[in-house]
Length: 390
Image (cartoon, rainbow, N blue to C red; front, side):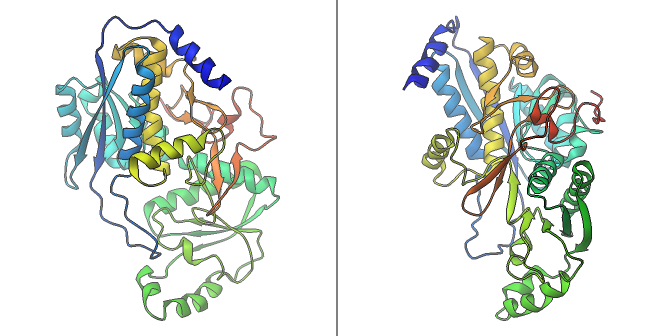
């Protein structure tokens, strides 16, 4: 109750704006091919990301009542063969300056590189590619989704805290899997771990769904995982094609981490600390399901715009953008620490959750990993390492 009274006093202390101009935020999603389920419990989520943005606008509207600011979400979808730049130009013609993207890296680059996009602020809620924060960074693009380097560093810190220094890395066949594996190699070197063995996953996913699939897996996986002794099996399987098959079938009884087992993510359905229960409940009421990592990134993007608008006491896009990038901006992200954007690459610095299937296990950065600025900057690309040149 005391915290609520303090929040209300802060909001009431913000002078009301003279007008009631709506702040319009667009979210662009893209059509994707469905992913074959691994488990019969898997369900396709058609509104992934979109529901997070909807909750962000609803939360903005709640706070905006005190400052007489209105927030409107404009929803757009790009077809599989659509041109993201065309969508950006159409939104620019409507006068929209804030765009949240639920796009893969190539589509995001096409959208952010268009001439009209230079007048906008684009916030990436999907693509974890480190290249987007380095060589292919754009001055008009921010990122609320963590980079692969951040996720890998978060896992490495936890594994080193557990003294699980020897890793066995299994990598999928997709390009994203290869990039994540490279991030794990970088993290191992950075924090003093050793990758004692590496293998690629070559088993065809469809074979596991036959009547005798479990028998085949029970014989093939021990052969695949018969390698030098190790402390932990690290999996790079972003598309969720094979990671669930490994626990309980490996040659040695070792913990599984990475994209499966102990996972690293910006958000998890099991999170409930630091007020996360309230966020989960609001999302469940809106979407009828638990919040996922892409939903959280979209929510954080929309909320960041709303927070900057309210704190800057302005509906002017230029003023909002300046505040968003400035040193005073902080977003309460329900993860125990305030979140802000790094000036060198536009990445939102944030804690990374380490979660099991049913409960939260830990949060990185881990204790003891210090930084001269923010401990959150021990995750991902630091200023001196950045290859981003706006």
